[in-house]
Image (cartoon, rainbow, N blue to C red):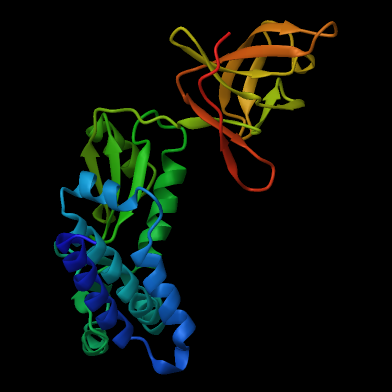
Amino acid sequence: MSRRHAATAGRVLAMAALVLATIPVARGEAVAARLVLSVWKPPPGMLTALQRDLHITVEQAQARLLNEARFTPVETQLRRRLGDRFAGSWLIGSTSQILVVATTDSADLPQITAMGARGEVVGRSLARLNATLKEVDAALATHPNGRVRLVDVRTNKVIVLSDSASATEDFLEAAGVDLVAVRVLPFAERPRPLSDLLGGDPYYVGSVNRCSIGFSVLRGTQSGFVSSGHCGVVGNTTFGVDRVSQGVFQASTFPASDFAWVSVNDGWTPRPSVKNGSGGIVSVAGSRA
């Protein structure tokens, strides 16, 4: 092991010791072991993604994971203790070293501090924010703007992103939504759902016939997948398992043979993977025809 890696491992293990020191002995060594394993061996690519997206070092990324693991049981206990006064929580600091817990009652601040977190008093509980979000969702169900909606516990408001903010505000006000609890922000993009093409995933032809994707293919720049010819004929439209528009049969042969290929729209991304039927994924790539 290089000196740099040895030093990194030493710092991580030292932090792990601090994390484990906060876990009551009564919970047992098994819980502690699982905690260390989950942050010492994160899923492949996680540390790289954290470094890339957050512009931090590998040491900082590992520290963030350790702090998140350390604060999870603290947040869970405070959420339960505060009940309907709980207004959300978030982590701050370059390594997520500070847990902030919001409440609607200042009397909760001492117990929040005693648990090792930082308290913040706000006007609306998380339950109230979620209720407001449901009202906003219902009001904007048929509105062409404001497609992105979420609860932002840091600002204690429901956030709506819209490419026509003023029109969306007027629409919400007319629907009787309390705009004091809502913040509409300008947002030029129009999000749309994206899905992966995985071999073995089901799809529908029309509204009834169900078949399975064979594997993803590319014809020039056109994405698609191969399937069985008995599933459909040229021109049939396909939908994903969630009934989202997917593609069109471009070629189909049956019964002399049994194969077809389907072109998909830009909401679908071909992946070089096929499900193996037992929960795993097999890589399939490189073949040409």
